[in-house]
Length: 132
Image (cartoon, rainbow, N blue to C red; front, side, top):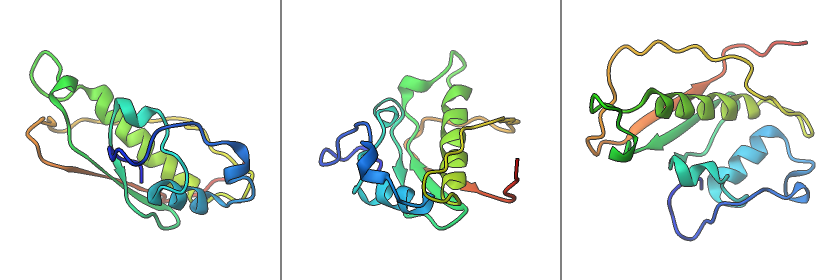
């Protein structure tokens, strides 16, 4: 599971661990701890719940270390969580050997996120898969 548990250490995924797996199999293995969580989770901790094809859910508790000068969560934290959810949801649709880097992200902030101890749900849901 991508999260803050001590039993799962961050690390790079060695190629033989995921070679031949579909995207959803990779994301499921990240969620259940069969593949190591990425090092980014040490910086911005979150928990990845078991995915379905085209949909992932992250859970995160905003921390005070990510507050901006106005006392609300920095937009970069929110954007990183959204990018992670979007990338993982797209990954669930891929065949073995395919990858999908982020191409573009646009966000409009409609209200502040507070570091008040509540868990946020960050949901990535794929609406359309395009072709090149």
